[in-house]
Length: 238
Image (cartoon, rainbow, N blue to C red; front, side, top):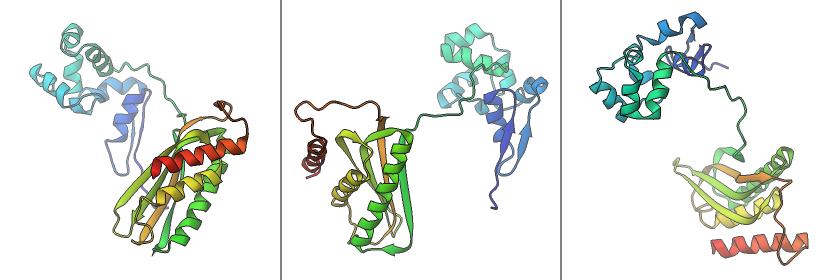
């Protein structure tokens, strides 16, 4: 589809990360296992992950300009200057990195967005789109087996100014209808209907497993619990 990508291949995670940035925007850098030290030594020290401005100043006082320079500094000096981070950076400079590659992250939020072909000012069109987005999010939440407590509405106006409005409800939900109702409340805090909008987004965060459910103190009727949540949302936003 015409996109460019740069990649780094190495036997260590941090080395692959460094390699991926060397020949942007469309390059491939491969560091064979036996060539790691040869690859690292001449590189500027600020290419080492974890070296920021403060650490860079410390290294400057030690005469460290490259990763190879760092490798030759006694580790006890680095620990005295930088604590545990000094030991960690010294190990990286020697090509030691035992961290595993993590290929799965916990889902933090689930959302949907829609960019309109033409700017929209009709709030009825916006409400229909919110309903459609919320239903899709509800399906995705149920598919993932999670519910969320914080519902966020994102609006990008025609001049590309973007705002978000959020509300945290009492109990987590995976109900597209309930998400829709909260988003309708959040619309009151925007200029939808007054200013043309280009993009609309809905997301749900603060996710918990659907298997974990807080018991209600005073009501055991599901409909009553839902009414309490929506009423709480109304009280909060008004």
